[in-house]
Structures are given as C-alpha cells and as structure tokens.
Length: 179
Image 1 (tube, rainbow, N blue to C red):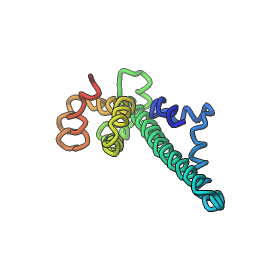
Image 2: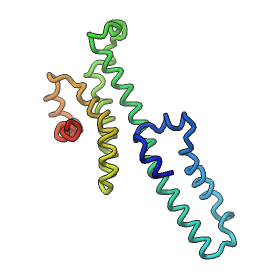
Image 3: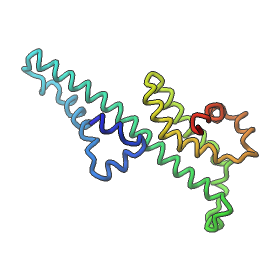
C-alpha cells in the first residue's frame, strides 16, 4: 500500500480518502496493535515475535509516509485559500469589485504567505536525507508555493526579499520551479 500511496500526488490525500481509498486502515491497524501489543504477543514464539516486530516497523514507515502526505495536503489547502484571497485584489476580474477587502491586501497577507512558505521549507529541510522525497515535494507542492510567492508584485519584490529570510530563500532557489 505504501508503494501505491507514493505514486499519488503528495497533496491529494483528502481527495483519495473521499473516494473510499483505504489509506487510513494501516494507521488504525498500527494504533490497535500498539494498544493491544501485550495481549497480541503473549505466548508467541521467537520467530513469530520477530514477524510481529517487522510488521510493526513496516506500519511505522507507512505512518511516516502518510503523515507527509497528510501535512502536504493540509498545506496545499491553506495555500489555495490564500491564493483565492490574493486573487480578490485583481481589478481585471469583474466580481472582485464586490469582493475587495483591505484584509486581503498583499501587505496584510504577507505574514500568512511567509508562514506557508516556511512550512514548505521546513518539510523540505526535514527530508534532506531523502533526496527522492525532496524532489517529489519540490515538484508537486513546490509548484503551489512558487505560484503563491509569485503573487507579490514586482514593485514590492525587492523590499520583501530584503525583509523576509524565507522569501529570500525562495528567490535564491526559484530556478528549481521555473526550469
């Protein structure tokens, strides 16, 4: 199941689970196994115990992969909401005349933008020992982050790069996203 899960886009976990994909079941099995470990392993032979330990380790690895997908899915959802709020500032969209809000100005949203960019880079940094995962996250979730970061107008770009270390990191690494 882990092999099947990693073939999916790292931020579509909520969509997969809505369509009845059973990706949560191994997590439930692990939780149940940990909770009832003593009862399940009582009286087992040494070989059976080794099998149980190996199964538990496999489920723990699956849980780690699942958590990455879950976090990426939540981050992607938050980024999409922020993108919609930023889009409400676009005067070329006729309905934005009614949606315009000072709360959605770039100046007011820059803190959220930095927060989501920081969350993305924290995830990338945590995967530094796993270059395949880093590449997958950069390719899939990074495209959303780069689109979000490019929402800053050119007039404000230089000032934000000077003031925001996380935005400067994006600016330094943006060629990853625009090959």
